[in-house]
View 1: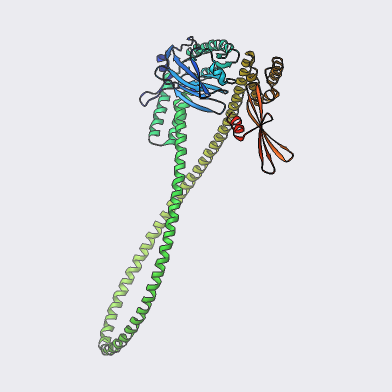
View 2: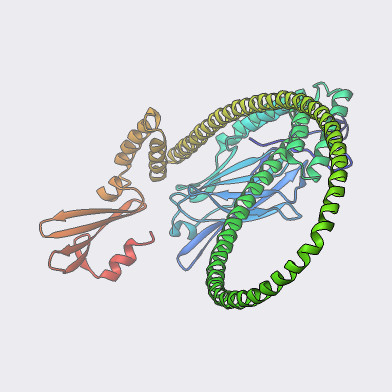
Length: 549
């Protein structure tokens, strides 16, 4: 679906109430789709393409900067923007089906279908007429439901071009043009109703702006989790606003990138730690060896020094014993007097020490009791806070899990709906192409289209009935020149068949209403032969005629 676009800057937050006063009236009756003008087809060296020259308008004026995307069955193959005159140019190849999507932010989208199936080189040389699609876009309403209804109408192509085999020209689907006018009236009614709807209140606008301002401030400070809460509150106030949705998406990407950077940083940190550990081990081993060497050298030096000291000490001790013996007699009396005085002083100090220790013990006990009481009170406070934190974390985890499950279920549902819508769209496109070709009596193109529709929805009866009808019509008109063209699809079909001592690679080439059988026969003894409809040919002719078709 086409999303609704809102403009926002840091000084002026978007408010639908003021937006409705300034937005221009949506103009829808300017022929939403105008057809006819230049698709030129040309050939160069046996290859050709169709050049599409288109124009995109808004309110009757050329619209520059519109995005024009070209798709085929494989996917997107080119993307251009309209120039300052609203023009663009694309080239299409033959025998393919294309979709051209025209989009621009804040505007409706448009799809144009082109089919060049059945368009050959000879047809290109004699092509008649020309066509040029002109598409007029208009602004989308801000109401999400109204925008969804309009996008539902525009989800299928309203313009279609195909190659008319009988007229030998690219023509538009007139029946689809008529139905598109009815769809325009529906869109006009939806837009007029949307303009009359009630505008949001001033209080809602004020709260929305506050949440956006807070979210932007937090986002700028890289506090992404807090910013996402503010943007979520703003989105709850105005669910149709795009800005908070866009910012939430940016936050998801930034947080995902931050996680990847953190992972790489951790890997780098682990690698550096491992390298440091290796270097440390090598250094430790080297230091241990050097330390062991020094220890042995020190042990020898210490032994020699110990022996020298022992000899010197023996001489010194002998002299000292002689001196002490002489001093002993003189100092014994003085020592007795000193000890008596020291004992008296020691007794006094011991009494003081005991008194001080008793007082210190009492003070210490009081401080211990007070400290234990404070620790018990703190432990109780910490326990209560811890229990509350655990409960809060558990509740948060439960809510996050429930939200993740709900988001996963919703995502799966949306993906299934999108896959179903794409399948239905491809089926409808194939049926429309087949019906258009059948009306134009282009049975080859019609048969290919209905066969494609049947591969998409094998249980559908409609394509089966149309294929039966085509077989009858082909049988009446004798359009196929041989059974190969009738049995096999356009292009090259390869089959491998083993016959006796040889293996045949059969390539059936169907171009238009004619089929040709090419055979490469490889024998068990190594010889290889090439045939075209039974006649002998060379390997180069076989490869040239059956490759790149």
